[in-house]
Image (cartoon, rainbow, N blue to C red):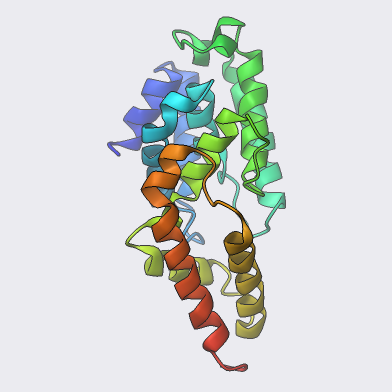
Length: 222
């Protein structure tokens, strides 16, 4: 993924108001307490959207949701996504309709209000990564957000997640993380779109199983 500021301008336009929102988002993603939910994660999600974007009904809204989906991050699952969704509504309401000027989605042709609602809904959806059947925008965003599970850098990702929850004692973290991984493995498929399954499903399941085995093999109190 090339320069994020340029990617934001391509998406939101180059008017000062849009530039200010982009700068705020980059600053939020750069906060020092973050270890995994960083600019690298944002770049990775934006890059993972690209091979799936042709499936989306509103690819501009999907990309905007990627920018906002962890813009608020305090390590509070559910709460972070809700605050991020509220931020998306606040900031995009200031920019509408300028931000969709020139965008080609049906929502954009309707004046942008639909796209704001779509972005906010998609940001909230990343709390559970469970889009409804036929929700193509949600499927694309959630698959892109979970692409990290299949990456060769999975070990670094897992370490970064632990660092973000460094305030949680080891035993509690291992138990909670194990539940998350078990829930992932219990899903019939991790990825909802066929291209994502072809690209990432096998590697992701292998990585998740490996981490889960390592977590459950660690004795209590270590």
